[in-house]
View 1 (cartoon, helix red, strand yellow):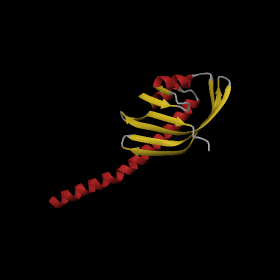
View 2 (tube, helix red, strand yellow):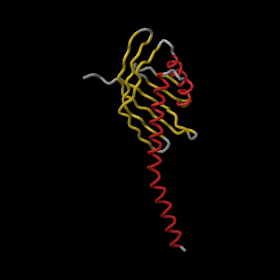
View 3 (tube, helix red, strand yellow):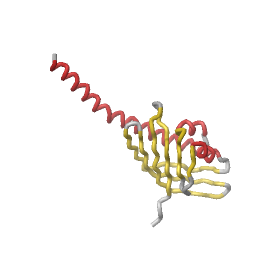
View 4 (tube, one colour):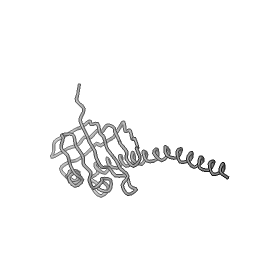
Length: 148
C-alpha cells in the first residue's frame, strides 16, 4: 500500500512538473497575441479595447521621456490630431515567470501629429501581469536607440 501511494505521488509530481512549461508556453502565446491587439487598438484609436488591456495602475514612458497613467495614455491615444499610419512590432520575445510576463522587442510607428510627419524606431519593454485571471499590461517603456 505504501509503495502504491509513493508511485501515485511520484506520478502526480511528474505530471505537474511537465505541464508547467506547457502552461508557460500557452501564457506566452496569449501575451504575444494581446501585445499585437494592443498595437492594433492604439493605431485604430479603439479606446474600449485598449482600456481592457491596461491595468488600473498602468504607467508608460514614451519616446520623449514623458510618462502617462492609464487615463493619460488613453487620452493621448484618443487624440484626433494624431493619425497613426504604421504601428508594427518585431523581434518580440515573451518570458513568463508565474503570473508575470516580460515582453521585449522593436516598435516602428509612423504618422502625422498636428499636421507634422513623424516616425519612430523604438525598443520596448512591457510588463504584463495576470490579474484576476486576466492578462493586463502594468508597465511599458519605449525608447529610441542612439544612432551610432
